[in-house]
Each structure stands twice: as C-alpha cells, then as structure tokens.
Amino acid sequence: MRKSNEDLHFAKQLKVGWNLGNTFEAHDLHMATQEPAVYEMYWNNPLTTPTLLQNIKAAGFQTIRIPVTWEEHVNEEFQINEEWLERIVEVVDESLDAGLFVILNAHHDKWYTPDRNNFEEAKEKMTRLWTQLSKRFEEYDERLLFESMNEPRLIDTHDEWTTGPYEAQKMVNQLNDVFVQTVRQTGKMNRMRYLLLPTYAARYETAALEAFKLPNDSHLMVSIHLYAPAAFAQSDNSESHFDLEKDTQQIDDFFADVKQLFIKKKIPVVITEFAASDKENLDDRVRWTNYIVEKATKLGIPYIWWDSGGKNQTYGLYDRYQEKWLFPEILDVLIP
Image 1 (cartoon, rainbow, N blue to C red):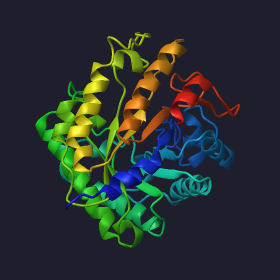
Image 2: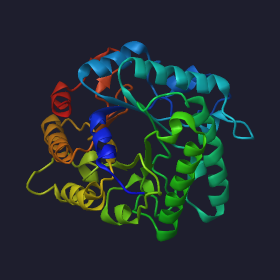
Image 3: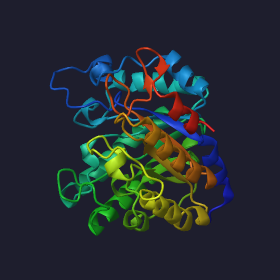
C-alpha cells in the first residue's frame, strides 16, 4: 500500500511519552490470586489513579504507554479474565480523559516467543487475544493505539538480546502481520486504528531494522527500544559516563538507519522505550537524554521514557508515592 505523509503527521502528535512501567505487566507472583490490585502493586508501585495520569499530562507528556501481561489472566480458551480486562479499560479511559494518547500492548507474554515449535500456537493466541481487545475497544477513536508485542525474542538463548537469527526475525514479521489482520477484521474504528509493530526484540541495530517487514496496510508504525550504548543506559552495567565525543556511534547509526529505511519511505517510527538508569550520574543522564531527544525531534520521531516507578527503581523518573518528579533536570530535557 502506498504510503502518504498522513501517518508521519499523526506520529508527530505523540511527541513525548511516559511508560506506566512495572504495573500491569507484573507476572510470576508465585501466589494463587486473580485480584487485579495485587498484580498492579506487586512490583512496588501504588494503584494507578486519575491524579497520576493528570500529573503526567500536566508535566507536558502527550502519550502514555500501558504495558500489560495477559497470559496470567486468561483461561484455557485464552479468554481474558473480565475483572482484569475491566481494570485495564478503566485506566485506558482515565488516561484518555486526562488528554493523553494511549498505547496498549502485550508485554512479557511468553506465548509470542518466535520459536519454530511455538509458532502455530503463537499465531492462534495472537488472534484470540487481539480479537477480544479489538472488540472491547472498537468504538474508541484514534487516540488509542495498539502494539502487538513487546521485545519478541528467543528467551533464555544466546540469541535473546541479539538482532535475532533469520528464522526468528521472519516469525516476528509474520506475527505482526497476523496482529494487523486480526485488528482490521474486527471493523469499526479498528479498520484505521494506528498499530505499532516491533522488530525482533525491539532491537535498534541495523540488522534488526533491515530484517523488519511492514505488512501491506496503512496506519502502521515501527516500535523500537533505544537503550544505547547499553553499558551506559542499562542498570546491570557499571558505565556511568556518557561522552559526546566517544559514545554516540550506536545512537548516530540508529537514527541514520531509521531515516533511510523508514522515514524517507513515509513509515513512522516510535521509540517506545528509552531511559538511562540512575548511577548517581545526573549530568551524564541529562546529556544522554538531550542527545537522543534532539536527534528524534529533527526526524519527527516520538520517544517514550521507560519509568519503572517503585521504590529504589533505577529508571524511575516520577515518584508515584510522593507524587513528585525525581529528576526535574531530565524532565526539562524530555519536554519540548
């Protein structure tokens, strides 16, 4: 399908976003419960409130991404627990009421692992999950976006955090295609709803971007995570300094690739996760954030900060208990 500037213009409206991290994607609780509140607070965050969402909007964010793990809230027929679904609907509604665009995804679900032995079942579950969600939100307008999967990858293998072997990359593309067809077939507002599709493991490197195939449809966006360089950005690495002279190559390559492979072809890209963990290196984090924000803004690419929230969480930007911003200096860089 021929692309137009319409999709790029819409993507620009998303601008800067905030992830409701470590909340509805909590899993492996090791206890027998289906109580939504227990899951929502299990990873050390309070219940999500309208006040929180209003504060996110008031700070200048335009978009909220709501990560959700579904597989612990379905029955044998993969039907979603109604109480869990209604809680998600409630927070989606409150986010929209606060004036935010909303991205709803499937997060930490192991069923979409792009493995040959798992593939047919993955396609079936993709269809069942997104048929239910699409029908539940079929009347919602374009401010609600769907994202097929989060970091689909070969978990616990040496390829987990690589750009992926060819067969797995191909399966991710095929699962994305099943997702698009499933949502579109439910009709109503879903016929033209904007949909986000990840690369293998949402990787940002050239090999992952080149392997990505966009389905033959419109109103689609590419979802990519940018924790680069990993030694600096991620919490399980010790590098705390970000040098503008020495440490920007991976970031520069990413934006050059995105411009050539997608933006020039009028395909929108969204950085659905990025953040630099707190290593008592605020100046470096500000410098890193500013470098990415400037690059993304020039290309009209929205960017969404991964906020883990919680107590003593290294990616936290907003204290949900005290209702205050922990690092105003980073916030000032994020908000244009």
